[in-house]
Amino acid sequence: MAESELSPKFAPFIGMGGIASAMIFGCMGAAYGTAKSGIGIAGVGTFRPDLIMKCLIPVVMSGIIAVYSLVISVLIAQDLQPGSNYSLFNGFMHLACGLSVGLTGLAAGYCIGVVGDKGVRSYMLQSRVFVGMVLILIFGEVLGLYGLIVALILNTKSKG
Amino acid sequence: MATRRIISEEKTLLEKDDSIGSSPAAGEKSDTSPAVPASVIIKLLAFTLGMIIIPISSYFLTVNSVFNGNSTYAGALAAIMANAVLIGYIFVAMAEDQSDQEGVAGAGGRSKEGKKDR
Image 1: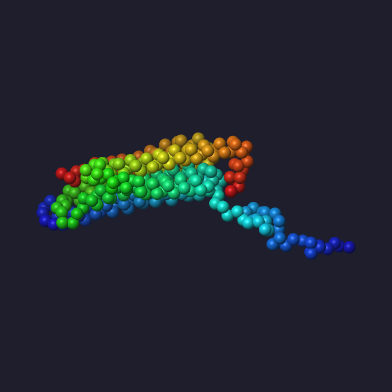
Image 2: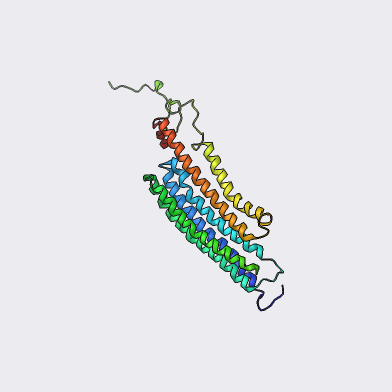
């Protein structure tokens, strides 16, 4: 790798930090969402086992948060090649990609966890809560999607 | 005179002929069939595998063939496919609930009681 002022040796380290932060923070959010809404399902399932199928929706949504992080990690990892001229701009841009999708995933997973736990418990008592719960979950989910969109747009700059 | 229990005619614990809760009567087999029907388990397994496989495979299948190496569109497609799986799950869960309610109405509320006992 030719070292220059614009592409120093430590630039790939910053990019790797982007990959790691995307996966770590995104999976922290997904894990919190899965665990917290899983507690709610365990509470509902003992009283109304027929509702479990519908109560699993927050768990599926938490899984999607992890898929967002995975997509961005794969995208960044494809740009990192040993021996290529990897500029410091690319490194910081990949860090921004990873942090944006990771931390929005953490926020979305936290939101899905709290809403999923309380939402399914309310749904057990009042079935009309379901539409509102799913809507709130979708709005929480969209927070992670915004991070993904920003990361995808940032990632296109690395070609230039 | 005090009456004595006739021990010879009494049934021991092993000979009990009524089923108490999930404990079966003597000579009967206990009900070990799963409480969740197989169709539900198949649906959940299908969605689990779909959640794992569909976004990743859609990315790697289309990145070079459809989008000519433009990984941004392929990544966006992977995210859209993940959301498609979620929407499919919501529809299936709604249909599941409606079929449950029809089953309850058909059996006159008897099956609902059984479901709660389960």
